[in-house]
Image (cartoon, rainbow, N blue to C red; front, side):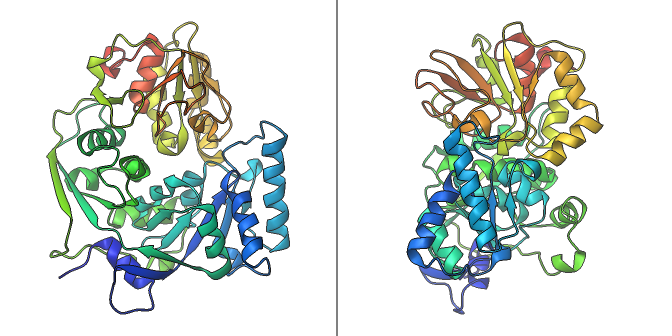
Length: 424
């Protein structure tokens, strides 16, 4: 019996020649943020406090409550900075050279195809777009990894998703993953690997692939993954500046006779933009069914949709138009490099002239952190990944999830809107 891509990566990182139910794996790279990092460090001191397994394979990315919103968040960053200096960890990133971790670390080449990566954040699965096995873990588990460079896993089964057909205009990777979660539910891939494949996935750019894998966790998955191809390698050479030699032999596929727990195959031709309604990412409806929903806030950004291609889509729709009066529209480029590119292309000017507010790179309102918290009864449409009760602020607020195209069109109308209503 053949192996899936995820199983092959587990085997590559195990001292054993045969994959069993549980595997003790060597870790290529690990990271935490300003929320989970301090908890990790405290546990690390309980385990050893003497040395880390490899200072260059650890990163702290301060992205959740930055710029610091209060003294506690400021102290968290200072705590991680001091720890990094003590253990000579070079990869400590604060607001002067940082960004949302799942975008920033890929952009800087910290993750490569076939790597086994763990992060103290559930959306670590984003790096599956690079053909890495990327798994979110708790702070205690990450402390153990920092001390030993290893972690044990129960080997998950794999679900295969095959997408056929052709995306309609204004339909994007965000719509694909929302549709997928709608079809299988928020527990439909519980502790499973979601392997995304088919001609539609192959045609997606890397940024669309990141969006797909980012939200695998919203279906309960252990991780999401896409087979690395030339598009993957070219992305890492171009954007992350990785030497081609570093990427040698970094292609790997699932075997034709690999065993999948289930295979889903959908023709997505004719799919219209999708919107997740409160209070679950699986409560998905076509955008055309929600035109009566009025909005108080729109957020364009996050580790799901804060990349340059997302900003280009939003700017294309907003150019020459104004956002609805009394509507807050917050645009958050995911990293400083994306911010600079958006400036260079004139996108920031378009956003400002249309009435948007530009935030520095941060997770911000996505987790109810800051830079756009909702009050009681307020309604937001966001390009983020979760819309649980109280996720973006008050427990009696309401969050809808959609693509940058839907978000920007809705910003103009002040209600949930199909992009074709305002753009050609």
